[in-house]
Length: 111
Image (cartoon, rainbow, N blue to C red; front, side, top):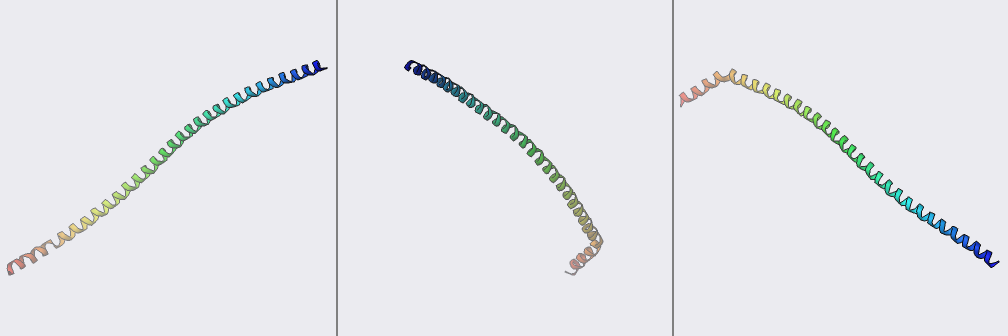
């Protein structure tokens, strides 16, 4: 009976060795899968970062362009107001020029 028991034990040990080899193989495959998933995740992160940068750049360009247009509009408005004020001042100078010259001449002649 000892020979039968030895045979059963040997079969059990062999089965355990096969299971151990299968576990090692599975662990190796799981490790490889983890590495592949990690690489895929990093690639996806890089892709998403690039898309995010592009979107941010486009949005920034739109904001800058809108700011430029607003600044041009305000600059034009300020320039028109300045021209208007300058015309007003020039017309006042022209209107009062003769009086100013008469005043200066009379002061000079009195001295």
